Length: 354
Image 1 (cartoon, rainbow, N blue to C red):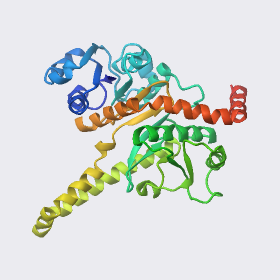
Image 2 (tube, helix red, strand yellow):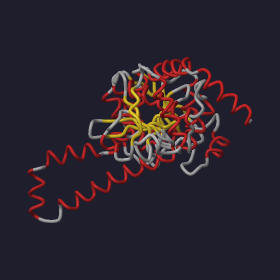
Image 3 (cartoon, rainbow, N blue to C red):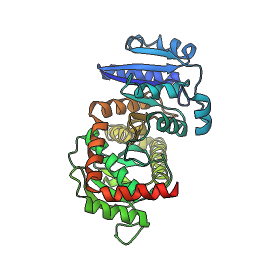
Image 4 (cartoon, rainbow, N blue to C red):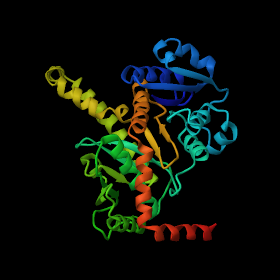
């Protein structure tokens, strides 16, 4: 059984979206169980409407819910040990759940996840990885907002984390990896990116195939299986793509409704439009995985509907089912075993700064 802890109070709509989303998962996955954390008086009435979910769930009452506008420091101060978000994460640490899913405050969720689960031994910073629809299928993009800025070694860590996720989710034996840059030429870009590129070329990792630098237009093409960047650029790219998809869908809908001939044409091309709508549906790729922690945490969009939340839960399910953490640890061990001097030098520099 895959046991998933749920922060039922997270997101813009709370349990009114979370519980119906769990129903969709329960209908599609027979080997899933839920540990639901939230205010019982708000969650239980909705849970009772979905007996199939109730039968495979345990509800744990929590008095406190982290608000969407809480600062991470506020969330830690007021919600540590007792909020629905904290308890859902802590269930993973305690071994009661295999992964945690929340649609709550991103900053608070990351702060609590780092504090509770801690990062893996050789990881400086966790990253948020997202699934990106492309012309070739789907790619992994990270970091999409966990932290701003990254040095060369952190970018390499992101590459290792992303390839492990690609292998676990898509079954790709040796994913291709690209570093987002302002050009594909080796002389362009920030020093951190150029250094990371050189180290990845020299690493000779069997778990990935380093492609080189990629640009913004490569996202849609699906040029590589894993796109690596720091959180500032990654988050802007993600939000821009999502906004563009919604914008194009609205334009298409408006164009099809303008004239009688357009409406008739839509009827004949409905199958093609349905496939396009499904491809552009941001709910299908909802869910960012926090990578680099000693546990799996998935962040769902706060404003998503039940289908989108179900997609986030199923993403966590797939990560557990396919042994994501074991793959990450194996890849990290291999890289750091081959480059002990670089890691040691970095640790010494950080100790001097402290």
